[in-house]
Length: 167
Image 1 (spheres, helix red, strand yellow):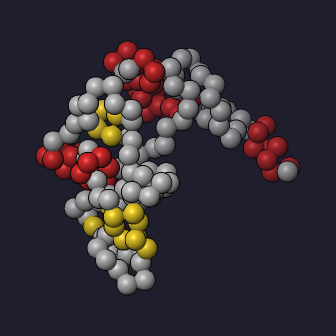
Image 2 (cartoon, rainbow, N blue to C red):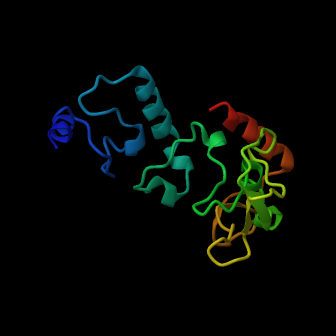
Image 3 (tube, one colour):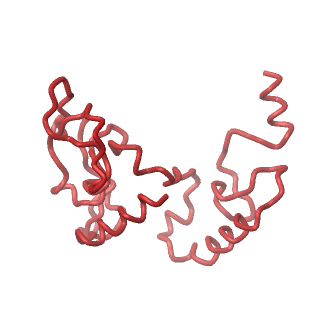
């Protein structure tokens, strides 16, 4: 308890959704710490480009998970129903309906774990309620629920994956 209080008095906190100078909190410097030039540059870039985002994204008051190391966090979505980044960036219709979990052999091309049949592995069936792998989709279907961006070509998916591997 005393350690937590010392942390708070030093200006550290456990998050929150308050805005500092109109910039989302995930890019604000830690209170009480000297501001780094990189933080200032990032804040300036966000301010310059904020108007390009959809209105609901401009007004979002939640912290977005950093993408650093996202290549190492498969399977994806809240229920682990998407086995790799390539499938996540694909339309829902192209995502695997069934795959195996439990393999620790990494798939560096699709960025996830191998999902072929595995003795002693768990078969993930995404057609079962609670296991759905819908939503968070890149699609050109206007007005469709869960669409977060335009459809990506296979080449664009691969390029994006190569970039995400570098984080």
